[in-house]
Length: 564
Ligand code: C2E
Ligand code: CA
Ligand code: CA
Image (cartoon, rainbow, N blue to C red; front, side, top):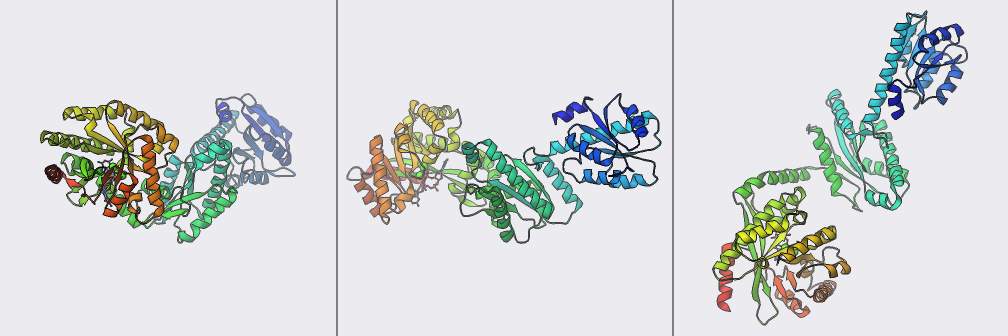
């Protein structure tokens, strides 16, 4: 490309004049040698040798049609069908009537009639052809990805749209293709190896779109887009295509996954079709059992529902459609369980959908960051509740959930301090639950955030302990104040011996860390008894109470206080 840009600036442009008549060669050469470096060939065969050797240097070929050995037409045909030589423009030199049309059809850029016209005209034609060809190459290189030769994303979308306009009723499928765990391959085996894999994938894709028609691009480092005529039997054809690519790669560590948006004629916007294909492709990320997924109506409904929830969120906050429920936690260390604290759990009272449980919207809001707003809302409500109970003479700490997204907010501790100060409560009354998997996602960042929060007097509970992959080593250095066992283990503690043992081990770990253990999801007396035997300190679950609206929780607190 740089070479081409230099040439464009007027440097080093070389033209080749091919003519068996020495006089003709010299006349033309004399017209051009002020501006160009001119080289000559006296027949087609010599010319072909020169062109092959000098392909990167040649800006233009001036080609006589009638020559011995290899004539101009034949040479032109060879050049146009050669993957490397087709870029060099050719101007045909002819005295023959009718030869112009045939030459242009064979791919000549222009023609010059013999005997030669005024030098100025010839020079202008030469320059024009060179400029055109160079501009074409620059555009071609811009629209292509340098590594794979496939289109770049922006040009791809533009050409896909044009394709749609040209064949307006043809069904076209959008496909997103991705390489599983590509960054690990890159890290383990080096970039050069990663690049060589991408190149191979690119050429398999290129081959496919050449066969089926359509277009393809490399849309990001390891992901590709294909826009191809509708695939009638994707369940048969896509696995075949994937095997073809994987065989070409010849590396069993590498697996490909594909998401398809199958065109049903509903004229969905181009970008959206690829977004949907990308969505299903992400869904099967790193799956060992599934290598492709087709976007379908169920997903579509889910997507619409999610979109609706996201749209409704602002209004819901303003109208206080989110209600905080409270579930009691009982200390079971003594003879009689004692209500010690509660967990704040949010519910959405949607005007149309009714009560929506948090599992339906928390991850959704985590994906787009909206969770921060909701969490601040819940923390405020919880702090206000602590104050109200305090005013009525009850000291009940409330634990709130802190999403993994909140951890990345550098103002997290300020926000929390602001909330407790506003409500005149102490930081030790607002317990913070952070899920274990957040710790394994980004250990150092979370440790830093948690240390700051603890310095400010907040107590941290590690939620869903056992569901993540914390190493024992990491656990020992973690600044936490309680471990909350993942509910899954409690569910099967009475039926699966393995889970019973695991809970025992986790309680041992808590002892080692000198923090209390909370078991949640406790529904039966048997579960409670087993946990008590194992040495669990605090119990939360339907056995004692479901999460309750604030007023019912207040009644429960009062009745517990009376029975003391
Ligand atoms: P979590 O923090 O692990 O909360 C415990 C979940 O278990 C709650 O579900 C609770 O209602 C349920 N549960 C309690 N006892 C039992 C029981 O005995 N049996 C069974 N089967 N379930 C029990 P919920 O309220 O649906 O909340 C689900 C998850 O949503 C929570 O899991 C938490 O991760 C998240 N969440 C809830 N509220 C908030 C919030 O305000 N902010 C954030 N970031 N996440 C929240
Ligand atoms: Ca929790
Ligand atoms: Ca939990």
